[in-house]
Image 1 (cartoon, rainbow, N blue to C red):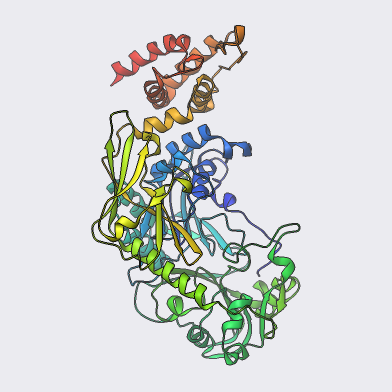
Image 2 (spheres, rainbow, N blue to C red):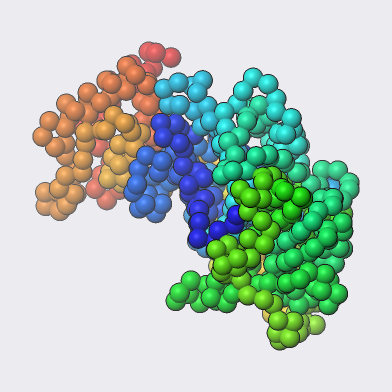
Length: 598
């Protein structure tokens, strides 16, 4: 039923089916790492047909993948829980349109982890496949133990009743956004929601029924009803949620959680279950790895397994066994229910067998010593949490002003004073490292915070914050609106990435794509070490042929080339013009043709 030896990667979820290409997509997540998101367009646009993993570290390929995909992918993430990436990158600015921060309508956390991707046949646009991923994993680099369910199907002509709760959730996402979602993106989300409602999913294995449960849109408990047997997997626990889950169950067989969560439970709560289990120490880390924070390692999966008569019910998704998720209904959560005959899909007790999760679990010893929380640390963490919430709730924006030498001054303003309550704060653009952070105390008095002077390529609304109190530190980022955004910002990013002739030529080959541009950088050191660019034997004829093919089949590809040439023409490096003069002479013929075709 849940085999720990069957591992899957997010990249497999993102890879289009054979013969198909990515069309549109929506994802939801609680926490978001921009560096993780930066790699998503690569898998959607490139790695489905290329097995070159070095592309993940190639800024030119990242740039082109973002251009191809970012307008058709929207990621909804909980406001105030964007992570600070492990490295700064000007390309983060190109994710601004993709990221949409939201707030749960009933005041809790926007906690669902969902991927809805639409793929179409590259030669027949009417041939469509929808892929749905319901996960317990956030869009981060965490290496915790998570669960995922991936379904595929083809939209039909009529709505499927079982899809209604999930279709309504997807359709509502733009209305929860902190900032207005563009009409074009709203339309894409609504089209995906409509496709979802009409899709019949292919069920995995021998499961027979499928149901969707969306929590947090309405007031009320999530009541699973009576059952014979019960097992619960949840890293976080509260007493009332466990009591609700156990109500009406004849036998509560197992509770799988984290040691600290089980230790914090009253003894009678643990006694409600026949066994309380945790991940075995050997399963916490891979061989040779050091232990990390339990926020990024250890158990993070969420599941409920029930038996009702001859049938097994498996619930997987994002909901913990906590008050906010299951009792008060404040959090937005998605759980999927699979139903099948227990003789075919497995029994609740199979979950604990050595062939199931039992091989990586160990019984929890309530006598296990747990480090008592330090009152001073607890108070500092509470102050940091309060300050983070205040900043996330504040109406803030970035204001840009150009100075005389072509740099841009960035100012951070809040419409009302922010209560820091004794917490120190730094702020900086995510395009630069945290060391560029400046004191943000002015926000407490309603004063503009001067973030400093920056190149146009570094201007972004993705803003990092570092909070500190009594030796405790917390970092997070917010997606803020930008006033006076430099019109040349995107062109400046292009110039920074494609900084020389070699980069220009490599980018050109990507743009021509399937036509295989017949150019190369030969003799890069050049005569007398000058790094001259030359055509190989017959290459100019091959390049001309490729451009003629592009003109006759997909002229839009040449408009992409035109966009790049216009932005880089006149730029120089140590070897001269970034756009080689001999290429520029060839290109003017196509440039004139494109102008006449307008």
